[in-house]
Amino acid sequence: MKFYDRVEELALLQKADKLKEKNSILSMVIGRRRVGKTTLVLQEFSKEKVLYFFVSKKSEKLLCEEFVLEIEDKLKVPIFGTISKFEELFLYLLQIAKTKSFTLIIDEFQEFYRVNNSIYSTIQKLWDLNKNSSNLHLIVCGSIYSLMKKIFEENNEPLFGRADFKIDLKPLKVDILKEILEDYNSYSNQNLLDFFILTGGVAKYIELFVLYESFNQNDMIDEMIKSHSLFLDEGKNRLIEEFGKDYTIYFSILSLISASKTSRTEIESILEKNISGHLYRLENDYSIIKSIKPIGAKVGSKIQKYEIVDNFLAFWFRFIYKYQSIVEIENYTKLKEIIRRDWKTFSGRFLEKLFIEIFKEQSRFTNIGSYWERGNQNEIDIVAIDDIEKKLLFCEVKLSQKRLNYNALVIKSQNLIKKYKNYEIKYKLLSINDLYK
Image (cartoon, rainbow, N blue to C red; front, side, top):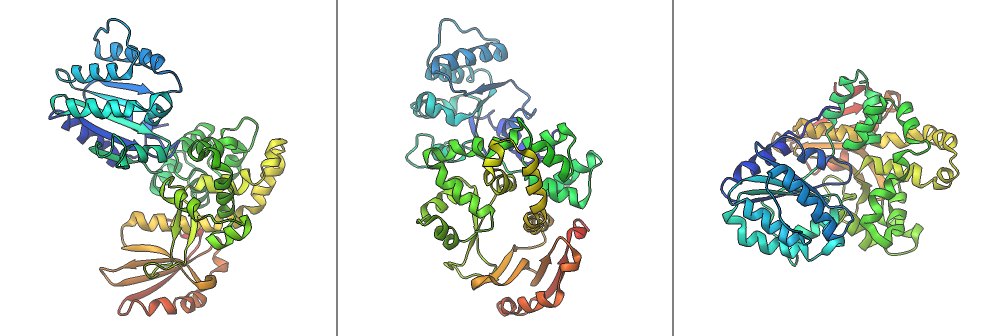
C-alpha cells in the first residue's frame, strides 16, 4: 500500500531536520495506537543518516546492545567495550553529533518508564548541556497518549518544555479515504460511509482492509469477525495499557456511550456511581471521548453529551465488547448477524459525523456542530455557521431521503435563529446520496 497524505507533518519534520544545522532539535510525535506514527517518521524527510531505536520491554542492558548495533551500522563508527547504560549511549551520540549531523528516532519512548524511569532525567541533563553545541534531530514517538503528554507537558517532569516541535498525529481525513477507495476501484457513497466507520481513518486498519481487498461492509465485517482476527481484541490491546487496573469502569462507560447513553446522568444512573472524574480523564488525559455542547450554548452550560472520538472504538464497544460472550464461544456467524441487523441504526449517526468532517475540510464555516434543547428537544443534526459572511446553515441528515422532513427542520431551528439576527438562513436535507455532491 502506498503512503497517503501527511503532507503537513512531513513538511514539519523536514523543517525541524534542517534546523539541526544550527543546534540540536527535539521533535515529539504522539497519537493513538495504529494511527501511523512509525510509518510517518520512517519516511525520507532527511538527507542525512537516520537511526531508529525501538524501546521494547527489555532490560536497559539488552536495549543498549541493540542500539549499539544500529549506531555501528548507520553511523559507521566503532564502539569499544560494553555499554549497558542509556546515559553512556546518549552522551556518545551527542558527542558524535558535534562533528556529524544525523537524526535519531526513539519509538515507544514512554516505555523507558518500565525500563528505567531515571532515563528521562538523564536525557534532560545531557540535552541541556549539549543541545547548543551539537547537530542532532531527536524524534521521540509514543503510543500511550497519556504517558507521552505527561512526559512533555507536565511541569514537574524533566522533559517539560524541551520539545521544539510537536506532531499530534490524527487519523486520515475523509478525502483521503475517498482517494484510497477510488485507487482500488471501490468508491461508492455507501462504501465511503462504511469505510469511515470501520477504519475511522486509522492507518493500520486501512492497510489491513487494502491487504484483504475488503472495501464494502460485508467484506470488511467478514474479515473483522472471524478466528484469529486482529480486530476482536483490538479495543483491549489499545486501551488496557492506558487505563491500567481501572480499565473495567472505563470500559463500562465507553460501552454505554457507544450504545447512545451519551449524557453523564444516563451513565451514572446505570452504573450507580459518580463518574465525573472518569469522564474528565477520558477526555483530557486519554483523548478517547469528547464532550459536545449545542451550538450557541452559553459558556458554563451543563447541557452536553459525550461521544467516542475513534469510530472503530465506537464500533468495537457497541458490538464486540457488548457481545463478548458470543466472541468467547466463537459464534462468529451469530455476531455477524447481529451487526448486520443493527447496522442501519448504528451507522446513521456516523453519516452526520461524516458530513461534519466533509464540511470541516471545505473550510467554509467558522463553527460546525449540532443543536438540541433541554430534554433532547428540537434536535438538529448539523448547524454550520459562517460568522464572517453572516450565514447560518441547518441540515437534517438521514440515510434515506424518504425520511427527511424540511418543514420539521425549519420549526426546530426557530429558537436558535433568534440568537443570530441578520444572518442569512439556509436549510439542507442530506442523505447518503449527497456525499461529495
